[in-house]
Picture 1 (spheres, rainbow, N blue to C red):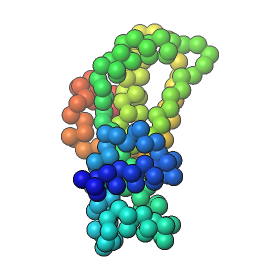
Picture 2 (picture 1 turned 120 degrees about the horizontal axis):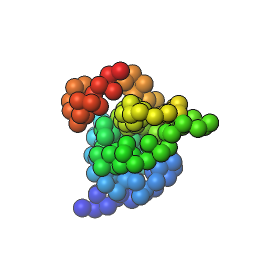
Picture 3 (picture 1 turned 120 degrees about the vertical axis):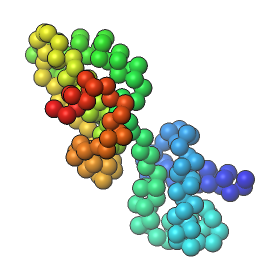
Picture 4 (picture 1 turned 60 degrees about the vertical axis):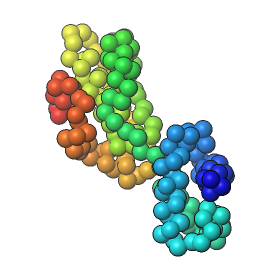
Length: 174
């Protein structure tokens, strides 16, 4: 049990140094701790998390590797379906009504891209209705360049698309 407490204290120390907020790590911290333990074994360090902290101090390049270990990649098409339905049925029709300003959206921390693609699908569904609709742009960003490349490719395995309705699939594939 002492080790788990030390690992949590380590994360509270390390995360802010990498620009992360501890409050965002309460749920996935078990996943990060598991990755840390694996890294400590991989480096063949004796002494657990204390040895890893010393290793970080002696090898500053390890911070980049630790940063990768701390990335949480929770992404899914239409995660929280009720929110997406509310967006499609209530908010976006009003926000997309034609006027002088284009509609701009930003998906910060887009991970594999499911959220910005979900937004694009919902916008296309709204714009398929009769009416005058403004143009739109969606900017998607993520601090992990590898994930961002996957998102830019927009290529997903069939199991990732299983939550999409047939109508949404049509708009995703166009």
